[in-house]
Length: 156
Image (cartoon, rainbow, N blue to C red; front, top):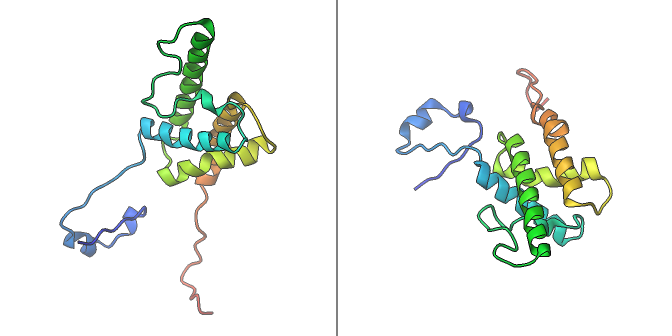
């Protein structure tokens, strides 16, 4: 059994593809997977103290809000804050629909470096930085293409 992967589908030789018994296309992560990837990166930034209230996010997209079923105004307020943070992150995930899983793992760290510059910050501030990165600097970095040098030999 041989497994091959490529993100340059148009560059794969047609004769090679004809010999493959099974060809599968695996696209970019869907909304839930994007949420889980970004959430885990945010949790890590919180663990190291760069985001002060990263625990406001659910551990995964499938986790119930904290305080669900708990009594008291503070538990209800925490559940509302968590639901709001989760909704904000889901909105950010929509901006990242064209990113691979590998690219998504880099986004939170790049957003922090380019838009926060100094830490720590709140989760709300960080989600704004993510949004800004994905709509501005992150979009332009996706457009960078390798330089084509014609038919010059690399041995020159």
